[in-house]
Image (cartoon, rainbow, N blue to C red; front, side):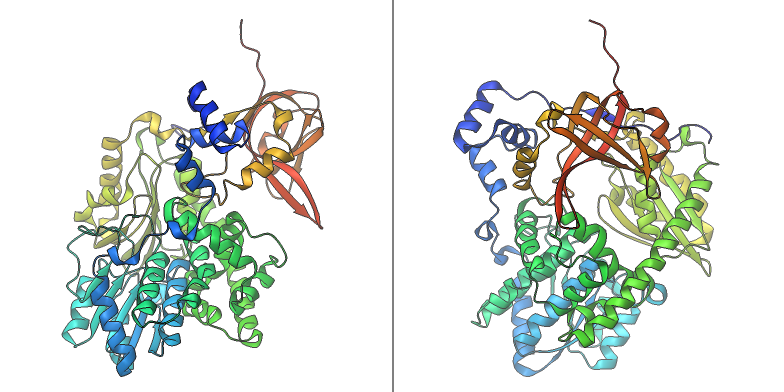
Length: 576
């Protein structure tokens, strides 16, 4: 590979906390010092802030009323329910869109309304509310179109709907890239002028807030809406929304509900994916459950996901769950093949002068390029756009690094794009084939202007350095109070130095490295996925410095501690 190769991460340690502040927090909270050190390293040094973080409660949620446009949306939906006007709910084809569509469909039906859920086909209809949604609304005779996880940028389609006498209500969370569409209401915490305090809600969070407001406006018991927090948790995790603020509360409570869910479709999906009876963590939801639901929109019809989540019987749900399981297996195969091809393309690039990567192919499936873009970013630490070409047009999906705002970066490239939208860390584009090279050059130019060479070196943020003997079951129990872990609230990373390896390294699975870390209690199994090629660096009885996450592993009913290796090196004594 020419130029820069994949970089080992640099370990970044937090500043040592003030001794007096640490002692005060320990006394105020009455919890172990290690927990207080973790709280301070995450910005929760004040006792009241720490209590809110450690004890997420539903009464910490904000009232929906501060969502700009809410009164008009509620008034029109109330009228539709009372008069029988058909409401078409138009969702996006990812988990967030599928769950939002399901949640609002259940809400309006429970309140007595007439609903038609619709999600476009990724392959034929493209992203967002477009001509397919307009035609479907006209075909079914909808009087109201209510969008989920889309619509903020769909000005033309919304203008067409309004011209046809159809009222449009947008619920979304994507950053507005241009002037908002002219319609009845746009519920989006990120829109200018919206005073809603928490800007991090996933689309399903916005749908949840609207459902609460609508139910209360009808003077109905809103218990059934709270009962759909399992959908809210599933979608919030799947959309990689920051697990802080309201999202932390929604996911913490929703995960508990997921474990005992009454949703027939979710139970079928859990059976098909082997999760029945297992503790549902955010990690398991994000890496096992969500991809199967996502597969419906990536390779098939996303509406099948809505049908699954609306199922009333196992006879309805089980065939769909099996279908999604098969789609997910196919998706995994496509992921591997696409990633291999992307790596081959990158091998021909001078990475020393490439700060922003743009790759394209007419053989790539548009349903998997977003996932593969994430892998490329992980490996090469550069903002990346992957584009699937068909009939002279490219559909692209991108991911970014913390130092680069992808949405803003694409705005600087708008002259080469037909369309773009998304977030700071993830976005999509539509681009003509004859503009691809110019777009790639401009994207790299923008990245070079905004990034420094050190931004291209991945960072491993360490929460705490400790003795390996302290990595015990008591510490793992403390960590449970910090869950759920995910974007915005990552699982704590610990560093232990001069740790003796209690066994020779083993290669497990496709690419895993298995080690045993010796402690005074015995040893801890340590696993490093994607590290099999490093097995030759280590030997039994060797001393290592290891960065790891402490987890509990369940296997055949037995619970044990496990260290998930984030990075590891042979220990080197420093000069005195």
